[in-house]
Image 1 (cartoon, one colour):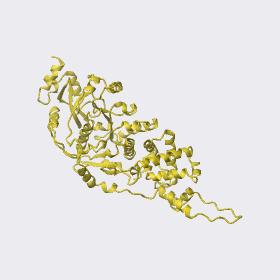
Image 2 (cartoon, one colour):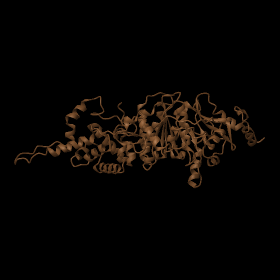
Image 3 (cartoon, one colour):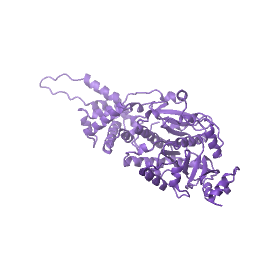
Image 4 (cartoon, one colour):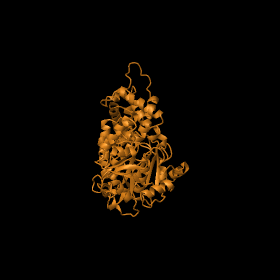
Length: 527
Protein backbone atom coordinates (compact mmCIF):
# COMPACT_ATOMS: atom_id res chain seq x y z
CA UNK A 1 0.00 0.00 0.00
CA UNK A 2 1.36 3.46 -0.87
CA UNK A 3 1.89 6.16 1.77
CA UNK A 4 -1.04 8.07 0.30
CA UNK A 5 -3.38 5.07 0.64
CA UNK A 6 -2.12 4.44 4.18
CA UNK A 7 -2.83 8.06 5.16
CA UNK A 8 -6.38 7.86 3.77
CA UNK A 9 -6.96 4.62 5.66
CA UNK A 10 -5.73 6.16 8.91
CA UNK A 11 -7.81 9.30 8.40
CA UNK A 12 -10.97 7.22 7.92
CA UNK A 13 -10.79 5.86 11.47
CA UNK A 14 -12.94 7.81 13.92
CA UNK A 15 -11.51 6.37 17.14
CA UNK A 16 -9.06 8.49 19.07
CA UNK A 17 -5.78 6.78 19.90
CA UNK A 18 -5.29 5.29 16.44
CA UNK A 19 -1.96 7.10 16.02
CA UNK A 20 0.05 3.86 15.63
CA UNK A 21 -1.73 3.34 12.29
CA UNK A 22 -0.40 6.66 10.94
CA UNK A 23 2.10 6.60 8.06
CA UNK A 24 5.66 6.10 9.29
CA UNK A 25 6.86 9.67 8.64
CA UNK A 26 3.69 11.17 10.11
CA UNK A 27 4.00 8.92 13.16
CA UNK A 28 7.55 10.14 13.75
CA UNK A 29 6.38 13.75 13.57
CA UNK A 30 3.46 13.08 15.93
CA UNK A 31 5.79 11.42 18.44
CA UNK A 32 7.79 14.66 18.64
CA UNK A 33 4.74 16.46 20.04
CA UNK A 34 3.64 13.84 22.61
CA UNK A 35 4.46 15.93 25.68
CA UNK A 36 3.78 14.70 29.21
CA UNK A 37 3.37 18.09 30.91
CA UNK A 38 0.97 21.02 30.34
CA UNK A 39 0.92 22.31 26.78
CA UNK A 40 -1.04 24.52 24.40
CA UNK A 41 -2.96 22.72 21.65
CA UNK A 42 -2.33 24.28 18.24
CA UNK A 43 -4.10 21.81 15.96
CA UNK A 44 -3.75 18.57 14.02
CA UNK A 45 -1.07 17.29 11.68
CA UNK A 46 -1.42 17.69 7.92
CA UNK A 47 0.16 14.91 5.88
CA UNK A 48 -0.14 14.12 2.20
CA UNK A 49 -3.03 16.56 1.85
CA UNK A 50 -5.04 15.07 4.71
CA UNK A 51 -5.73 16.24 8.27
CA UNK A 52 -4.82 13.56 10.82
CA UNK A 53 -6.65 14.58 14.03
CA UNK A 54 -5.07 11.85 16.15
CA UNK A 55 -1.68 13.53 15.66
CA UNK A 56 -2.01 16.67 17.80
CA UNK A 57 0.53 19.50 17.49
CA UNK A 58 1.28 21.28 20.77
CA UNK A 59 3.66 23.68 22.53
CA UNK A 60 4.91 22.83 26.06
CA UNK A 61 3.81 25.58 28.45
CA UNK A 62 7.25 25.96 30.12
CA UNK A 63 8.82 26.59 26.70
CA UNK A 64 6.72 29.69 25.97
CA UNK A 65 9.39 31.87 27.57
CA UNK A 66 11.87 30.64 24.93
CA UNK A 67 10.27 33.14 22.55
CA UNK A 68 8.80 32.61 19.13
CA UNK A 69 7.89 33.86 15.67
CA UNK A 70 4.48 33.97 14.00
CA UNK A 71 4.92 34.80 10.33
CA UNK A 72 3.01 34.66 7.08
CA UNK A 73 1.57 36.71 4.25
CA UNK A 74 -1.37 39.05 4.79
CA UNK A 75 -4.66 37.18 5.16
CA UNK A 76 -3.19 33.80 6.07
CA UNK A 77 -4.45 33.75 9.68
CA UNK A 78 -1.66 35.21 11.84
CA UNK A 79 -4.09 37.24 13.95
CA UNK A 80 -6.26 34.20 14.67
CA UNK A 81 -3.13 32.28 15.68
CA UNK A 82 -2.28 35.00 18.20
CA UNK A 83 -5.84 34.80 19.52
CA UNK A 84 -5.71 31.01 19.79
CA UNK A 85 -2.43 31.04 21.73
CA UNK A 86 -3.50 33.95 23.95
CA UNK A 87 -6.74 32.18 24.90
CA UNK A 88 -4.96 29.05 26.05
CA UNK A 89 -2.30 30.99 27.94
CA UNK A 90 -5.01 32.92 29.77
CA UNK A 91 -6.85 29.68 30.59
CA UNK A 92 -3.66 28.36 32.19
CA UNK A 93 -3.21 31.47 34.35
CA UNK A 94 -0.58 33.22 32.20
CA UNK A 95 -1.04 36.97 31.53
CA UNK A 96 -0.72 38.00 27.88
CA UNK A 97 0.12 41.25 26.10
CA UNK A 98 -1.23 41.70 22.56
CA UNK A 99 -0.49 44.59 20.23
CA UNK A 100 -3.68 45.02 18.17
CA UNK A 101 -2.62 46.92 15.07
CA UNK A 102 -5.71 46.25 12.97
CA UNK A 103 -8.23 46.56 15.79
CA UNK A 104 -9.75 43.09 15.53
CA UNK A 105 -8.39 41.41 18.69
CA UNK A 106 -10.81 43.05 21.12
CA UNK A 107 -13.15 40.11 20.45
CA UNK A 108 -11.03 37.96 22.76
CA UNK A 109 -13.12 39.37 25.61
CA UNK A 110 -16.40 37.99 24.19
CA UNK A 111 -17.62 34.45 23.43
CA UNK A 112 -17.26 33.40 19.81
CA UNK A 113 -20.01 32.33 17.44
CA UNK A 114 -20.05 28.67 16.52
CA UNK A 115 -20.99 29.00 12.86
CA UNK A 116 -20.62 26.22 10.29
CA UNK A 117 -17.00 27.11 9.47
CA UNK A 118 -15.96 27.04 13.13
CA UNK A 119 -17.79 23.77 13.77
CA UNK A 120 -16.24 22.25 10.65
CA UNK A 121 -12.74 23.26 11.73
CA UNK A 122 -13.33 21.91 15.24
CA UNK A 123 -14.47 18.57 13.80
CA UNK A 124 -11.43 18.39 11.50
CA UNK A 125 -8.97 18.70 14.37
CA UNK A 126 -10.95 16.91 17.14
CA UNK A 127 -11.43 20.15 19.09
CA UNK A 128 -14.13 20.33 21.74
CA UNK A 129 -15.07 23.90 20.89
CA UNK A 130 -16.96 26.00 23.46
CA UNK A 131 -17.80 29.66 23.01
CA UNK A 132 -15.73 31.47 25.68
CA UNK A 133 -14.72 35.05 26.45
CA UNK A 134 -11.50 35.76 28.33
CA UNK A 135 -10.62 38.46 30.88
CA UNK A 136 -9.21 41.40 28.92
CA UNK A 137 -8.24 45.01 29.44
CA UNK A 138 -7.72 47.57 26.69
CA UNK A 139 -5.04 50.21 26.41
CA UNK A 140 -4.19 53.01 23.97
CA UNK A 141 -0.97 54.96 23.47
CA UNK A 142 -1.46 58.32 25.11
CA UNK A 143 -5.17 57.66 25.26
CA UNK A 144 -5.46 58.16 21.48
CA UNK A 145 -8.25 55.74 20.60
CA UNK A 146 -10.19 53.34 22.80
CA UNK A 147 -8.26 52.31 25.89
CA UNK A 148 -6.58 53.17 29.17
CA UNK A 149 -3.83 55.69 28.35
CA UNK A 150 -0.29 54.33 28.21
CA UNK A 151 2.29 57.09 28.61
CA UNK A 152 6.02 57.22 29.22
CA UNK A 153 8.05 60.07 30.64
CA UNK A 154 10.73 61.32 28.29
CA UNK A 155 13.45 60.56 30.82
CA UNK A 156 12.25 56.97 31.23
CA UNK A 157 11.92 56.49 27.48
CA UNK A 158 15.54 57.52 27.09
CA UNK A 159 17.64 58.97 24.27
CA UNK A 160 18.16 55.78 22.25
CA UNK A 161 14.50 54.91 21.76
CA UNK A 162 13.56 58.57 21.31
CA UNK A 163 16.20 58.91 18.60
CA UNK A 164 14.60 55.97 16.80
CA UNK A 165 11.20 57.69 16.93
CA UNK A 166 12.62 61.04 15.79
CA UNK A 167 14.59 59.45 12.95
CA UNK A 168 17.95 60.81 14.16
CA UNK A 169 21.24 59.49 12.80
CA UNK A 170 23.91 57.94 14.99
CA UNK A 171 25.75 61.21 15.65
CA UNK A 172 22.53 63.00 16.56
CA UNK A 173 21.54 60.06 18.80
CA UNK A 174 24.81 60.39 20.70
CA UNK A 175 24.25 64.13 21.02
CA UNK A 176 20.75 63.57 22.37
CA UNK A 177 22.30 61.26 24.94
CA UNK A 178 24.55 64.12 26.06
CA UNK A 179 21.51 66.39 26.43
CA UNK A 180 19.81 63.76 28.63
CA UNK A 181 23.02 63.50 30.67
CA UNK A 182 23.03 67.28 31.12
CA UNK A 183 19.38 67.35 32.23
CA UNK A 184 19.90 64.40 34.58
CA UNK A 185 22.86 66.00 36.35
CA UNK A 186 21.24 69.46 36.60
CA UNK A 187 18.00 68.21 38.11
CA UNK A 188 15.95 69.30 35.09
CA UNK A 189 13.25 66.63 34.97
CA UNK A 190 12.16 65.53 31.49
CA UNK A 191 8.57 64.39 31.92
CA UNK A 192 7.08 65.45 28.58
CA UNK A 193 8.28 66.70 25.21
CA UNK A 194 8.05 70.37 26.13
CA UNK A 195 10.55 69.71 28.94
CA UNK A 196 13.10 68.31 26.52
CA UNK A 197 12.39 71.05 23.98
CA UNK A 198 12.93 73.68 26.69
CA UNK A 199 16.33 72.22 27.64
CA UNK A 200 17.50 72.01 24.02
CA UNK A 201 16.17 75.52 23.29
CA UNK A 202 18.12 76.84 26.27
CA UNK A 203 21.32 75.12 25.15
CA UNK A 204 20.99 76.63 21.67
CA UNK A 205 20.21 80.15 22.98
CA UNK A 206 22.78 82.91 23.28
CA UNK A 207 22.81 82.51 27.04
CA UNK A 208 22.95 78.72 27.03
CA UNK A 209 25.69 78.22 24.46
CA UNK A 210 28.27 78.56 27.21
CA UNK A 211 26.75 75.47 28.80
CA UNK A 212 27.48 73.48 25.63
CA UNK A 213 31.16 73.70 26.51
CA UNK A 214 30.44 71.50 29.53
CA UNK A 215 28.89 68.82 27.30
CA UNK A 216 31.71 67.31 25.28
CA UNK A 217 30.98 66.62 21.63
CA UNK A 218 27.67 68.49 21.33
CA UNK A 219 27.70 71.22 18.73
CA UNK A 220 25.24 74.08 18.41
CA UNK A 221 24.33 72.89 14.92
CA UNK A 222 23.47 69.35 16.05
CA UNK A 223 21.49 70.64 19.02
CA UNK A 224 19.57 72.83 16.57
CA UNK A 225 18.75 69.80 14.38
CA UNK A 226 17.43 67.94 17.41
CA UNK A 227 15.31 70.95 18.42
CA UNK A 228 13.77 71.17 14.96
CA UNK A 229 13.05 67.42 14.98
CA UNK A 230 11.34 67.73 18.35
CA UNK A 231 9.26 70.68 17.20
CA UNK A 232 8.12 68.84 14.07
CA UNK A 233 7.38 65.74 16.13
CA UNK A 234 5.14 67.71 18.49
CA UNK A 235 3.43 69.40 15.54
CA UNK A 236 2.37 65.93 14.32
CA UNK A 237 0.38 65.42 17.54
CA UNK A 238 2.90 63.19 19.31
CA UNK A 239 2.97 65.06 22.62
CA UNK A 240 0.12 62.97 24.09
CA UNK A 241 2.30 59.85 24.27
CA UNK A 242 4.83 61.36 26.69
CA UNK A 243 4.08 62.54 30.20
CA UNK A 244 2.58 61.44 33.46
CA UNK A 245 1.22 59.34 35.01
CA UNK A 246 3.72 56.95 33.51
CA UNK A 247 2.41 53.46 32.88
CA UNK A 248 3.79 50.62 35.00
CA UNK A 249 4.33 47.64 32.67
CA UNK A 250 4.10 45.43 35.77
CA UNK A 251 0.34 46.05 35.60
CA UNK A 252 0.30 43.64 32.66
CA UNK A 253 1.29 40.77 34.99
CA UNK A 254 -2.09 40.23 36.61
CA UNK A 255 -4.68 37.49 36.88
CA UNK A 256 -8.46 37.72 37.09
CA UNK A 257 -10.40 36.63 40.19
CA UNK A 258 -11.01 33.21 38.62
CA UNK A 259 -7.26 32.61 38.20
CA UNK A 260 -7.14 33.14 34.44
CA UNK A 261 -4.43 35.42 33.11
CA UNK A 262 -5.58 38.87 32.01
CA UNK A 263 -5.11 39.58 28.30
CA UNK A 264 -3.87 43.16 27.89
CA UNK A 265 -4.78 44.44 24.42
CA UNK A 266 -2.97 47.57 23.24
CA UNK A 267 -5.36 49.11 20.70
CA UNK A 268 -3.28 50.67 17.91
CA UNK A 269 -5.66 51.40 14.99
CA UNK A 270 -5.71 55.12 15.87
CA UNK A 271 -1.91 55.30 15.44
CA UNK A 272 -1.50 53.02 12.42
CA UNK A 273 -0.07 55.97 10.50
CA UNK A 274 2.73 56.32 13.08
CA UNK A 275 4.26 52.83 12.90
CA UNK A 276 7.70 53.72 14.17
CA UNK A 277 6.17 55.32 17.23
CA UNK A 278 4.15 52.31 18.33
CA UNK A 279 6.86 49.76 17.52
CA UNK A 280 9.38 51.74 19.58
CA UNK A 281 6.84 52.14 22.40
CA UNK A 282 6.47 48.35 22.45
CA UNK A 283 10.24 48.06 22.81
CA UNK A 284 10.11 50.52 25.73
CA UNK A 285 7.50 48.39 27.47
CA UNK A 286 9.65 45.30 26.97
CA UNK A 287 12.84 47.04 28.10
CA UNK A 288 11.06 48.36 31.20
CA UNK A 289 9.88 44.88 32.11
CA UNK A 290 13.42 43.63 31.57
CA UNK A 291 15.00 45.88 34.16
CA UNK A 292 12.15 45.66 36.68
CA UNK A 293 11.51 41.93 36.93
CA UNK A 294 13.67 39.65 39.12
CA UNK A 295 15.59 36.68 37.78
CA UNK A 296 13.55 33.48 38.03
CA UNK A 297 15.35 31.07 35.69
CA UNK A 298 13.32 28.21 34.25
CA UNK A 299 9.69 28.28 35.39
CA UNK A 300 6.71 25.94 35.10
CA UNK A 301 4.87 28.63 33.16
CA UNK A 302 5.78 32.13 31.96
CA UNK A 303 5.01 35.24 33.98
CA UNK A 304 3.93 36.98 30.76
CA UNK A 305 3.90 36.29 27.04
CA UNK A 306 4.37 39.44 24.95
CA UNK A 307 3.27 39.51 21.29
CA UNK A 308 5.19 42.11 19.27
CA UNK A 309 3.14 42.76 16.11
CA UNK A 310 4.48 44.40 12.93
CA UNK A 311 7.95 43.56 14.21
CA UNK A 312 9.73 44.59 11.01
CA UNK A 313 8.97 48.24 11.83
CA UNK A 314 11.25 48.02 14.86
CA UNK A 315 14.19 46.79 12.83
CA UNK A 316 13.84 48.99 9.73
CA UNK A 317 16.71 51.49 9.64
CA UNK A 318 17.96 50.45 13.07
CA UNK A 319 21.61 51.03 13.95
CA UNK A 320 23.89 48.14 14.88
CA UNK A 321 23.97 49.35 18.49
CA UNK A 322 20.17 49.41 18.58
CA UNK A 323 19.94 45.89 17.15
CA UNK A 324 22.55 44.67 19.64
CA UNK A 325 20.42 46.06 22.48
CA UNK A 326 17.29 44.31 21.16
CA UNK A 327 19.20 41.04 20.84
CA UNK A 328 20.54 41.28 24.37
CA UNK A 329 17.12 42.16 25.80
CA UNK A 330 15.43 39.23 24.05
CA UNK A 331 18.18 36.84 25.07
CA UNK A 332 18.15 37.82 28.75
CA UNK A 333 14.46 38.49 29.39
CA UNK A 334 13.77 34.74 29.18
CA UNK A 335 15.34 34.37 32.62
CA UNK A 336 12.80 36.91 33.93
CA UNK A 337 9.99 34.55 32.93
CA UNK A 338 8.84 36.61 29.93
CA UNK A 339 8.29 35.10 26.49
CA UNK A 340 8.36 37.32 23.39
CA UNK A 341 6.71 36.42 20.09
CA UNK A 342 7.56 38.56 17.08
CA UNK A 343 4.80 38.77 14.47
CA UNK A 344 5.69 39.70 10.90
CA UNK A 345 5.42 38.52 7.29
CA UNK A 346 8.67 36.61 6.75
CA UNK A 347 11.55 35.52 9.01
CA UNK A 348 13.91 37.71 6.98
CA UNK A 349 12.16 40.73 8.55
CA UNK A 350 13.89 39.78 11.82
CA UNK A 351 17.71 40.08 12.10
CA UNK A 352 19.46 36.72 12.28
CA UNK A 353 20.85 37.36 15.78
CA UNK A 354 17.32 37.96 17.07
CA UNK A 355 15.85 35.11 15.01
CA UNK A 356 18.35 32.73 16.61
CA UNK A 357 16.73 33.46 20.02
CA UNK A 358 13.25 32.40 18.87
CA UNK A 359 12.67 28.75 19.77
CA UNK A 360 9.03 28.39 18.63
CA UNK A 361 7.87 28.94 15.05
CA UNK A 362 4.43 29.17 13.46
CA UNK A 363 4.86 29.93 9.76
CA UNK A 364 1.72 30.61 7.74
CA UNK A 365 1.58 30.60 3.95
CA UNK A 366 3.92 32.72 1.85
CA UNK A 367 3.34 34.09 -1.64
CA UNK A 368 5.83 33.65 -4.47
CA UNK A 369 4.48 35.88 -7.22
CA UNK A 370 7.68 37.85 -7.87
CA UNK A 371 11.42 37.07 -7.93
CA UNK A 372 11.72 38.89 -4.58
CA UNK A 373 8.94 36.70 -3.15
CA UNK A 374 10.70 33.56 -4.39
CA UNK A 375 13.96 34.69 -2.83
CA UNK A 376 12.20 35.32 0.50
CA UNK A 377 10.56 31.87 0.27
CA UNK A 378 13.89 30.12 -0.21
CA UNK A 379 15.39 32.10 2.67
CA UNK A 380 12.49 31.09 4.92
CA UNK A 381 12.91 27.40 4.07
CA UNK A 382 16.57 27.59 5.09
CA UNK A 383 15.59 28.76 8.59
CA UNK A 384 13.76 25.48 9.33
CA UNK A 385 15.33 22.20 10.51
CA UNK A 386 15.52 19.32 8.04
CA UNK A 387 12.02 18.21 7.15
CA UNK A 388 10.15 15.33 5.57
CA UNK A 389 8.15 17.94 3.63
CA UNK A 390 8.98 19.82 0.45
CA UNK A 391 8.75 23.12 2.30
CA UNK A 392 8.94 25.38 -0.74
CA UNK A 393 5.90 23.69 -2.21
CA UNK A 394 4.12 23.35 1.14
CA UNK A 395 4.51 27.00 2.22
CA UNK A 396 2.93 28.30 -0.96
CA UNK A 397 0.05 25.82 -0.79
CA UNK A 398 -1.13 26.23 2.82
CA UNK A 399 -4.70 27.43 3.30
CA UNK A 400 -5.95 30.09 5.69
CA UNK A 401 -5.60 28.82 9.25
CA UNK A 402 -2.86 26.35 8.35
CA UNK A 403 0.80 26.70 9.22
CA UNK A 404 4.16 24.97 9.42
CA UNK A 405 5.15 24.53 13.07
CA UNK A 406 8.30 23.66 14.96
CA UNK A 407 8.69 24.30 18.71
CA UNK A 408 10.99 23.39 21.55
CA UNK A 409 10.24 20.11 23.30
CA UNK A 410 10.14 19.78 27.08
CA UNK A 411 13.86 18.96 26.92
CA UNK A 412 14.59 22.10 24.88
CA UNK A 413 15.25 20.32 21.58
CA UNK A 414 13.50 21.37 18.34
CA UNK A 415 10.49 19.25 17.39
CA UNK A 416 10.06 17.87 13.86
CA UNK A 417 8.59 20.30 11.33
CA UNK A 418 4.82 19.74 11.23
CA UNK A 419 2.30 21.10 8.76
CA UNK A 420 -0.70 21.89 10.95
CA UNK A 421 -4.37 22.68 10.58
CA UNK A 422 -4.90 25.10 13.44
CA UNK A 423 -7.75 25.07 15.93
CA UNK A 424 -10.45 27.73 15.92
CA UNK A 425 -10.36 30.42 18.62
CA UNK A 426 -13.20 30.11 21.11
CA UNK A 427 -13.65 33.86 21.55
CA UNK A 428 -15.12 36.30 19.03
CA UNK A 429 -13.06 36.47 15.84
CA UNK A 430 -13.52 40.17 15.23
CA UNK A 431 -13.85 43.42 17.20
CA UNK A 432 -16.42 44.01 19.91
CA UNK A 433 -18.75 46.99 19.62
CA UNK A 434 -17.06 50.33 20.41
CA UNK A 435 -19.56 51.06 23.21
CA UNK A 436 -18.79 47.69 24.84
CA UNK A 437 -15.07 48.37 24.59
CA UNK A 438 -15.40 51.85 26.11
CA UNK A 439 -17.45 50.47 29.00
CA UNK A 440 -14.79 47.83 29.68
CA UNK A 441 -12.15 50.56 29.73
CA UNK A 442 -14.03 52.74 32.22
CA UNK A 443 -14.76 49.77 34.49
CA UNK A 444 -11.11 48.72 34.70
CA UNK A 445 -9.46 49.21 38.11
CA UNK A 446 -6.54 50.84 36.25
CA UNK A 447 -8.64 53.53 34.61
CA UNK A 448 -8.66 55.88 37.60
CA UNK A 449 -4.90 55.62 37.94
CA UNK A 450 -3.96 56.47 34.36
CA UNK A 451 -6.89 58.24 32.69
CA UNK A 452 -6.12 61.82 33.74
CA UNK A 453 -2.86 63.37 32.51
CA UNK A 454 -0.72 65.15 35.14
CA UNK A 455 1.67 68.05 34.46
CA UNK A 456 4.03 68.47 37.41
CA UNK A 457 6.77 71.09 37.71
CA UNK A 458 9.70 69.96 35.60
CA UNK A 459 12.36 71.33 33.24
CA UNK A 460 9.95 73.49 31.23
CA UNK A 461 8.48 75.19 34.27
CA UNK A 462 11.86 75.66 35.95
CA UNK A 463 13.50 77.20 32.90
CA UNK A 464 10.46 79.35 32.14
CA UNK A 465 10.40 80.63 35.72
CA UNK A 466 14.13 81.39 35.59
CA UNK A 467 13.67 83.32 32.35
CA UNK A 468 10.81 85.29 33.92
CA UNK A 469 12.92 86.14 36.94
CA UNK A 470 15.69 87.31 34.68
CA UNK A 471 13.32 89.62 32.78
CA UNK A 472 11.86 91.16 35.97
CA UNK A 473 15.23 91.54 37.70
CA UNK A 474 17.05 93.41 34.92
CA UNK A 475 19.53 95.82 36.61
CA UNK A 476 19.33 99.59 36.11
CA UNK A 477 22.01 101.21 33.93
CA UNK A 478 25.14 101.59 36.10
CA UNK A 479 26.41 104.99 37.17
CA UNK A 480 29.30 106.34 35.09
CA UNK A 481 32.63 105.00 36.20
CA UNK A 482 31.18 101.99 38.07
CA UNK A 483 31.54 98.48 36.65
CA UNK A 484 28.18 96.73 36.14
CA UNK A 485 27.40 93.81 38.42
CA UNK A 486 27.64 90.51 36.50
CA UNK A 487 24.24 88.79 36.40
CA UNK A 488 24.24 85.00 36.87
CA UNK A 489 23.43 82.92 33.82
CA UNK A 490 20.06 81.23 33.57
CA UNK A 491 21.45 77.82 34.42
CA UNK A 492 23.32 79.29 37.40
CA UNK A 493 20.03 80.65 38.68
CA UNK A 494 18.46 77.20 38.36
CA UNK A 495 21.37 75.31 39.88
CA UNK A 496 21.89 77.85 42.68
CA UNK A 497 18.22 77.90 43.66
CA UNK A 498 17.22 76.66 47.10
CA UNK A 499 15.06 73.96 45.54
CA UNK A 500 17.92 72.55 43.51
CA UNK A 501 20.34 72.58 46.46
CA UNK A 502 17.78 70.77 48.58
CA UNK A 503 17.26 68.19 45.88
CA UNK A 504 20.98 67.76 45.37
CA UNK A 505 21.33 66.85 49.04
CA UNK A 506 18.67 64.16 48.72
CA UNK A 507 20.61 61.09 47.69
CA UNK A 508 17.48 58.96 47.95
CA UNK A 509 15.74 60.61 44.98
CA UNK A 510 16.43 60.58 41.26
CA UNK A 511 17.01 64.35 41.29
CA UNK A 512 20.32 65.93 42.18
CA UNK A 513 22.27 62.97 40.81
CA UNK A 514 22.71 61.38 37.43
CA UNK A 515 20.02 58.88 36.53
CA UNK A 516 21.23 55.33 35.97
CA UNK A 517 20.51 54.33 32.40
CA UNK A 518 20.37 50.88 30.86
CA UNK A 519 20.67 49.06 27.54
CA UNK A 520 18.46 51.44 25.58
CA UNK A 521 19.41 54.52 27.60
CA UNK A 522 16.11 54.12 29.46
CA UNK A 523 16.04 55.28 33.07
CA UNK A 524 15.78 52.68 35.79
CA UNK A 525 12.43 52.83 37.58
CA UNK A 526 12.05 54.28 41.05
CA UNK A 527 9.13 52.36 42.60
